[in-house]
Amino acid sequence: MRRVVKVGTSLLRGTAERPTAAVIADLVASLNRACRRAESVALVTSGAVGLGCAVLAMARRPGEVAALQAAAAVGQGQLMALYQDAFAVRGLTAAQVLLTRGDLASRRRYQNACRTLEQLLAWGVVPVVNENDTLATDELRFGDNDTLSALVAVAVEADELILLTDVDRLYSGDPRSDNSAQPIEEVRDLAELERLTHVAGGGGRWGTGGMTTKLAAARIATSSGIRVHLADGRDPAVLDALLAGQRVGTVFQPSLEPLSTRKRWLAHALVPKGSLRLDAGAERALLRQGASLLAVGVTAVEGDFSAREAVRLLAADGRELGRGLASLASAELRQLMGRAGVEVVHRDRLALL
Image 1 (cartoon, rainbow, N blue to C red):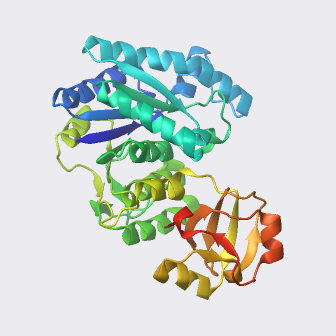
Image 2: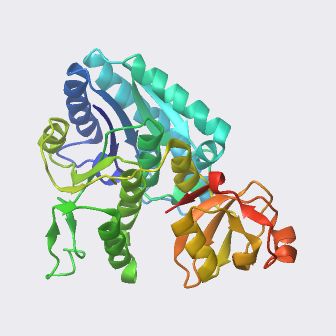
């Protein structure tokens, strides 16, 4: 069994009674028990900015990007030291892996990252993965490392992704403000997950609690054949139960028809530089016939992109149908839009969502 465990800032922040060091010690103790069962575990962690702010005695989290990056630079070393000490006490070795979205959007760098993570796991080393907040700006807006954890799970071909948060499970609404919100123990397929995602985005009520980004992470993982668990990480016994195979919190079942390895990268790791809006005929050709996208079916080109850069493919009503690598630059495509026989995205460089 191979798992990726993600822990966020809300948990690592700790309390006066249970400081960050104690939270990390309990977390590592649970991971150690899984490793002793000959299971592979990778950890995706937040917390660098928060620890940096604490070391610098900041009363509040800074709003400027440069200040956030500087705080991350201070906190990352503190965070890794806590993890290394906790792992060393139990005879395990941890490895720091800092990634940016650009590392995963480049096919070559993505493959390099996959090979590095795979080698660490083969050695019995626990990768401790975090976004490289010190250098990357966009990554600070990913939202609690949820997307990164799903992409890491895809990269290492994990069986399960465990998202530890500060609520006990997924609800039909925000239970803190909606008395009618009902607990959800299981999300069975991508269609059901899509419906929940629309609810979460409505009014942004869940966004403040990070539920929107967790649903996005679940979509990435489950479409790649990875089971996802969302559970309360404030109780150390919860992670032990999940690692022992028990059902706790909400489980998102994996797709029965997962994307291939390359299609996973196309669908989830790439950063789209633009969008193509398609007519009904092009949509049918993509979804029902497995065809390439031709210029005759493109009704609008949004954004500026070069050939071989990623684009989103949108239905006439704005639904995202998939992503792929454009064969033409946006300027050239605008001139050829609507013409027959001109290939825009080859089907081998296209992933339907």
